[in-house]
Structure formats: structure tokens, C-alpha cells
Amino acid sequence: MKYELLNNNKVFLNGVVVEKPTFSHETYGEGFYEVKLSVPRLSEHNDILPVTVSEKFLKDFNLGQPVALKGQFRSFNKLNGEKSSLVLNVFAREIIQRDETMNPNIIEITGFLCKPPVFRTTPFNREICDILVAVNRAYNKSDYLPCIAWGRNARYIKDAPVGKKLEIVGRIQSRDYQKKLESGEVITKTAYEISINRINILENEAINVNEAE
Image (tube, rainbow, N blue to C red):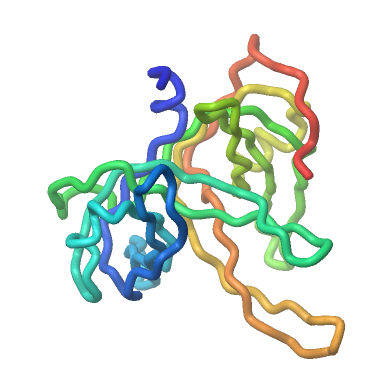
């Protein structure tokens, strides 16, 4: 795998397993499992994040067990009837020694803006900008990662053209929201996104990209 493709999407998480691993799929004879990790914020809130782990790491993911890992934030389209939805999770590449002095939730990505930014102001006059970033992966794949910028970062990115290359540092956050079904039933769902701490537009680098479906 190219060095660049290993370093354009880097995640570090340090948290506690809050859900027993469940089997997800098998690739080339290797089993992979889904697990939920509770990762603390600087506030009292915790983010509950989905993680995909190989069967070789399962001994590190017992319920209630603290674990630190390095990996990548990935996406794939999941078909549900005629509709598809973007599914996001952290792919664990390495289990590492825990260090309580480190920020427990760090992500660094380099990718391309693939939809026009959506800028808005909240009722409390907080400026927010939503963007979608395509990050290249091996085997000609890309991960489409939703990001949210605040305040000065929101103003900085709101007019960027599609195709611009971006460097982003932040954290992965979980956010619950209400969705009303066609039947009228209201259900609670969870969204995952990158909350941006730092963002940089690489001024001389851009590509033509198709907007993600």
C-alpha cells in the first residue's frame, strides 16, 4: 500500500468497550467484527463510536475493557431497498498502549471537497459549515467523510470550490437526531462526523471530482 494512502487518513482513539463484538463479514478467510467504543470528550459527554476489528484483535475488545487503537475512518454505501445510506466506522489497524496524557480522539485527513459547503447560522448566532470530503484509499476506493466546521473555520471554508484539496485535524463525534418515517413514527438515529479543529486549503492543488451520491 502506498505510504500516502496510509497517512492521508489517521485516527487515534482511547476509550472503553460498551458493546459486545458482533460478527460483520469475512474477507480472504479473516473474520471482522463490529464493536462500540465510548470515547470521552473534554466535556462530560462521551462519543459512542462504531469500530470494525479483525478477529485477531478480539481479545482486546471484551465488554468494559479499556483500549487504545490506531486506524482509519471509513465509509461505505449500504443498500436498503431502493435507497442507499452512507455508513461510517473506524477500521482498527493497530492496538497500542494506552496513554492517558494524550487527547483520546484525534483524526487527521487529507482529501478533496466533493460537494459545495453548506453554511448556516444557528438561532444562537453560531456559524456552522458542513462539508463532505473524499479521501483516497487503496484499490481505487475513496471514503466520503462528513465534517463540520465552526466559527472562524466555518467562514474560512464556506466559499471553497468543489475539488479543492484540504488538510483537516479534528475529532470524530456521534450525534443523535430525530427522524420521522413515512408511517409518522419518529425514531432516534445516530450520525457520525468529523468536528474540525484545524483546516487548511492547499491553494495550488485541486482535482475535478464528481459529487458523492
